[in-house]
Length: 63
Image 1 (cartoon, rainbow, N blue to C red):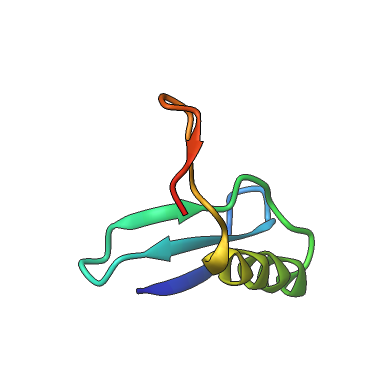
Image 2: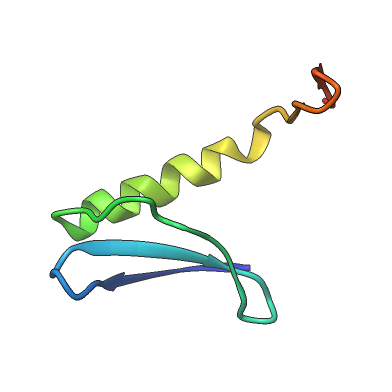
């Protein structure tokens, strides 16, 4: 899996997180004014690797 950073049509920086088959898994929900802002967003997603998962249908934490 890998990240791609790019500029959108408005000139803002965005990122995509892609699977090994090159399909998008996640995309930035906002545009960033700077490339560093987009890289910081990627860093936050990478830190969320240890995020817990909540099953809202059963209202329980899965991990």
